Length: 379
Image 1: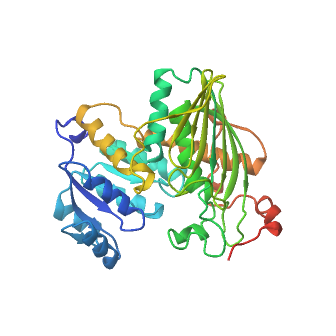
Image 2: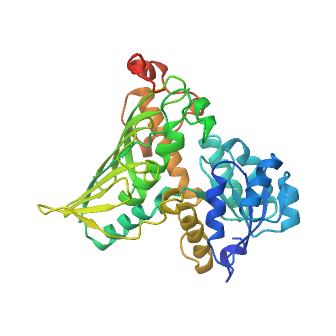
Image 3: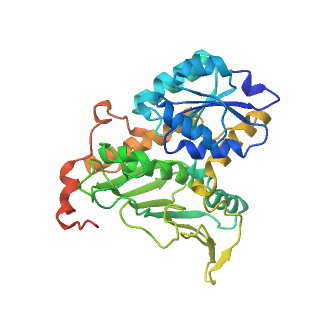
């Protein structure tokens, strides 16, 4: 066990690795936490790091990770870099006995995620995966209402994902251009969030069945999916996802879509404005008013809420959500989704062993392009 995990004080000095698109949301979150100081920002691109440092008034930037860690002596490393860098970045942190929060996707594949989890355990330092969707205010409120018993016994959840950012030849280029060339896209980048969130709300996943498609032919990976979930409680789930269409919202990326959470006592519905609506059984639907978080920060400020949770859990010795060990189950379910699509079969999670040879393969092309001749691109 690291000293941090039993310290009477949470870490105050944070070193951030990565100055890409999503780093701004991490830095925004750290800036909102009292007493926390980002002591360094590292990126191989000095210009990118300098621009982000100026925006957030950071004193020091680096292009070499080891140099940054030795110069700034942080309490915590926040890793906001692509998966191929995770092994090297985390090893450098673990060598110095530093705990880390690591963005998802966690590692390049399931095998590497297992290895990195083992390395953290051997180093005796905490490793948390930055899986922030479960920290979005609407999902936290839904969990609170579940715990209060308002919904009664849960029997179903469905989420209709429609962020509307994946149409045409310029799909994703303005935000995350590497999406176009990823051999596996929707499940690895987006559905993984809902695998975790469904587990957070509904409990453990026992089995999945999935069909994946590619609707936009300019990309390499899948961008649409129908995934069904069987939960240990007997409840069922459905993720109906595509990244081409949008939904009714001023900002389709605020909630990314709409949810229906069903129980014996009624239905809790999430709309595109992050409002929750409660319909008791045989009763009228009314708005359930709660604190929806920021309308401009990603996910209602989910990054900062995750960061606050991690620091508070270490301060008070309470359980930390999204530890690397716990997160491996999400990745196992992710691989089961791809295996279900490839085999056309329902996959029971506890009987499933991922095939390493499939980790970097695109899902079956024939299934992808079955509808591509009907696709109409927008200008």
